[in-house]
Length: 462
Image 1 (cartoon, rainbow, N blue to C red):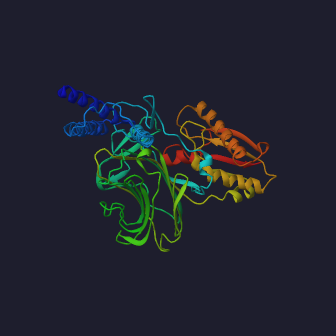
Image 2: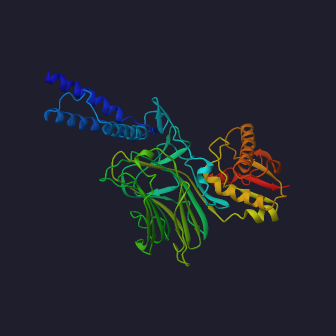
Image 3: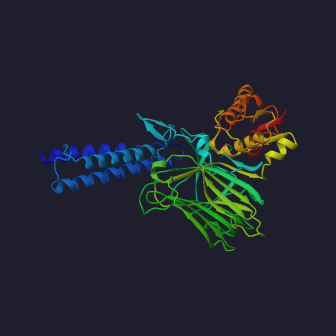
């Protein structure tokens, strides 16, 4: 009878462990790195769970499947534990067979995590630069390859993740690894750097490091001291997963790439295991000596003296320290833009304002919430100049079908009109719309930067 109970225990716990190990972020990569990691993780969980089960049997805790009487407090605690466990199950993962949706799960069907709305960004004051000078979405790179325009002292590969747009650079277990976009070689006095970040299998264990650092620094050679997160004067921003909630950190660096005492840390609550699979939008904004850093709608740092007056920033470096086998971090949609848009002057004085700061989901007229500050600035200009009417014109790049791009550009212009009216109270009778599709590019659609600049919204004073 005891053998039968133990056999039942082994089978039951093995099935539970397999269910717990089910992946939600699924990566399409020829290397199948993530698939092997998921299999190893499942096997380890089965072994650990079975061992715990045998321990309980040997200690005389029999009939573990029998329902026991519980107090109201115990029931409540069990419900909370179940909720947290379900959340972790739904957002963990890492298998790579084929393509399937990423994010949270509903009835076995995975769906992308809920996206924030424009209203969530109501205090967001980030203004992206006027002209995009560098862009990276890895479109030109083959899945499974390391990106051609980058350098590293480690390894990583371009992947696609089901349920998420585009391609991503996947960084797995690594130590003191730098990833350098060599096409960025000048960072002027006024610029913005933005990118999207997703992490996977970040758990609550102290033993592991999970850090992605972004460094802006002054170096003669971008690969100088490549095994460190910085090699010269500048600033380093760290996105750090820790036990439970994680943190973000901003540190000034000196000539040797070492940290100075100008250092800040923010226990940023959203970095936690429940947000495995969430897309975080990171933005860094330099204005001469000042550096502001945003994660999603939150301004997490604002250093007025981050950079010395004589600094010549020349390179960007992403640096990773990830010490457990299953953990991964993904980055994409990198965008460097220069110059500060002057909405008021250009629209009212010059009669035309063009912005790439109003962005949309891929092949969609849904406005991304990080566009809030740009829309707010335009609305303020129109509110201050109550007699002014404008025509909103949408433009796309040349990817895709010409007719579809024309229709999309018109829908995007309408979406901007609706946002200005409903979110900011600008009268719809003052706003006309049109779309030009891909027919009026600013520059040929031959590079990621050119395409990003061609995806724009124009406001023409009537």
